[in-house]
Image (cartoon, rainbow, N blue to C red):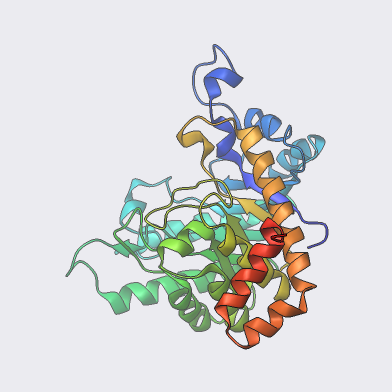
Length: 329
């Protein structure tokens, strides 16, 4: 991760639209948001939502973003085109609706490849349930496995990454945590399938981020890392390190040790309260760069590995705080 790529959520750059584009009615266009994102010092990539952000010529879109100095890290599926998807995408009770979601995903994969990307993130937030006696769990699970397997087989050279989340919009997501997602990946059995870790999702799944990353690296692979922060109650989308600084540093150390070489993507929500998205993204980048320097120092300190081997929490905390906050002289 010596030359870390930084990607971000394009919709963040609609924040404060009335200030960025005075007098404009309606939402900013994809290119308007991209032009604003291109002002961020250190930003290298964007992730695009499909089909929301993608026109009929993905290659041309990629070229236009390239002219701004930005690459496409990958696409992320959004299942909003059919109102029936609210009851499920790959798990909808009607076969025709499931088929529509699967075919839409295949089109998204094709578009990503045309744009020069080879990563499709699937967040299956609509696949779940809200009530007892609403679902045949075994049937719903099988539909999920079959749908994921089919989209993986569509283009074996395109990486498919599952972004899990405990709930929202459904009360219970079918893929709510690392362990359940890994079970699904094992049953799908596709070599191009892996996991996207979203920091806030991991927190309110009641997981320790670095442990989740280690577990995924052991049984599958981390294909995406979405950094943000929150209070572990919902998907707050706060700035990196705002609440869980130590856990973020530990996650960065873990994914480095496990060989992650993808982009660090900022899934933060400056648009929720009208923050300046350019400045917010620049601070996120600088925060991660500082954290990576801390990781470098931690890896060079033999005291830490020795203390971890002993599970000596007092010593590990002292060492980490010393390296992060400075020695007490």
